[in-house]
Length: 337
Image 1 (cartoon, rainbow, N blue to C red):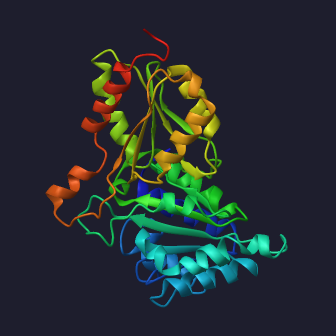
Image 2: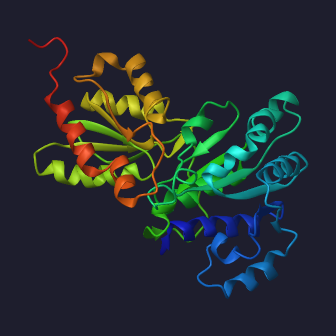
């Protein structure tokens, strides 16, 4: 075990994959110049080592065109390579929606399984960092609506490394959404190779009174809330789905069956969000287990302002989560007098 940051764990996963498989390449805007960061190096001096180790054929700069990056990566994947594409801001994915929706997501099906698409698209969610409306999006719910794509949203360095290694090995396209607010988060991470399977949620914290399903930075918000609620005698269970597609609905349903109450903490927008989908699954399949209405702690359906003071108020935080938990705890059991 060694202490790794979130970004360092991503770099370690990429280095391991490139060392293990010559088909793995990295593509993106100016990645050659920024490879020390992309590859999880400790300093700019590491840049030369990475370039010497893997060469410019495997660390490839692309034009400043998301359509080119995504389209070229799809073609490369279909012809035998395993690209990792660094798309920088997650809002840049919109520039290549035709490639994502009509090519990347559909081509394996359209070719009758004769071609696979082993490609990973990494993007950073810069919300909470005063980057304004264009760069603060959290678009993973939008892509949950596109069949053919797998989606990971890691919340810890360990999950970032393990999920990314799994993603690189897959023969399906994977979108990785990484919150920049977590980049500096550090923890002990296994230095060796390991993989975390998609579709397997993590129980972050055991509890008996209420379940919180938390996504991305919402996991850390939920932990803060749970610590304060414990002082009030409220036992909080926290579930981190880790991957949104496939979603471990069984783990969520089992958790709700244990506690009878559900709060979802999701930094994405409210309408048609991941929290809405999780709510629908529980309402359809575990309604009889609920002792109170489901509550969502999400970001309002509004553009993100540049003002730091205003922006901070929009996202889920511990206070909003505590308020939601108190409300579900106060809700009467169905059928009670």
